[in-house]
Length: 191
Image 1: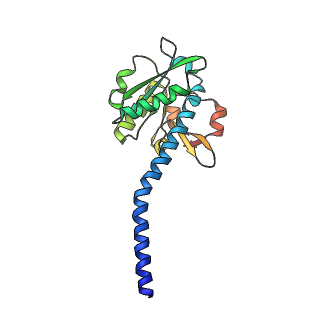
Image 2: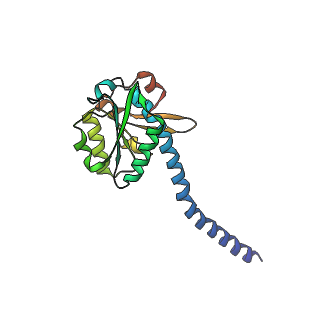
Image 3: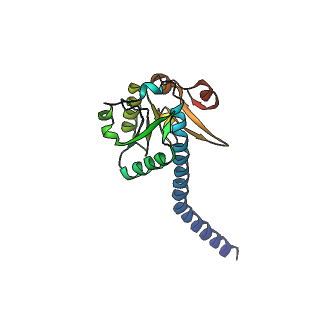
């Protein structure tokens, strides 16, 4: 009888493990989706405290965000629409969102941009390219994805007991982005 119970227990555990394999990606996708939505809410507020924002406005005087994607343009467009629905202006200036492929990012800097928002996970080469553009253009690179601040994104989010901005201090200094000191004091920092 013990052998039969052990055999049933092993089968039950096996079934449970197989179910976890199917449910785990769904749960992690759900967490990532939540993280992106939180990031979209925080992103314009962080850009608004860039002390040099006025110098990053193009001739038409709007706050221009680049939403960068690699393979999923429709996802980037959907995220840009979510932002546009919630944020129409920053400091009285209209907001304009430009959706652009990571391969074309360097082509778009004929006009100033206020910040870059990464809309999907990027490989190392693409990610490093975006960070280099952010540093050279002296603008923030915001990534909602866990681990990207450690890889060099200027800012992301730290989600724990509370949600806080998460700054990469080296990238922030290299890009010469001037963030309100009060915000830095209450933020998580990667140094």
